[in-house]
Length: 226
Image: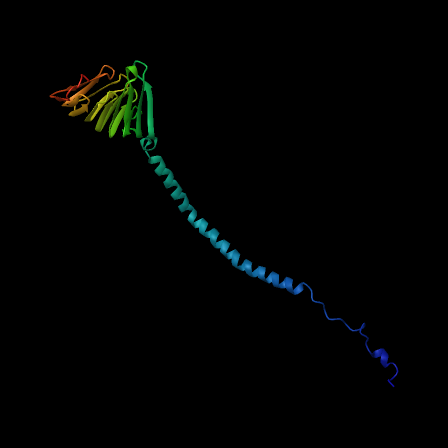
């Protein structure tokens, strides 16, 4: 038999000390250590960025000031010049008949904006009785105040009576409905063929006269078309 009192010395399961339960302590310690390592990297990097900004800031200000000076040095004419694409000018002549001046491109070339340089200009003028005349060229200069259009390069005149004239330069008075030129000209129509040293379109576009030394070859049976 076991000695008396031996059972008292035997520890029961309830009396044995339990093992420490696993808790959040180790995980919290590992997370804190990772945060510390991250801060050891981020804080020096942020300090370097701030130092770089402090060093570079005067240079940034100099560049900004240079840009301002360059803009201030621009002349007004370099930025105030007006350019239009597919430009159109409309008006009425002395007899209240409409006319139109059009161009693929227009650029103001005078300080007061009155003279406009035109690319591929065309002038359409309505005449008495519903007739019309059209002139075009490679380049033109339109005076808005004077109502004149000077055409240069491959100038063509078309009249609804069926005749046309070709020359190198012409001055059109769009408000009067007249035109003139002092360069060699040649024309053709139902009347025949004519050449001369210039032309004048008068009587509100009703008549065209060839000036200078001229030559006329009439078609057989041609009536007085001019």
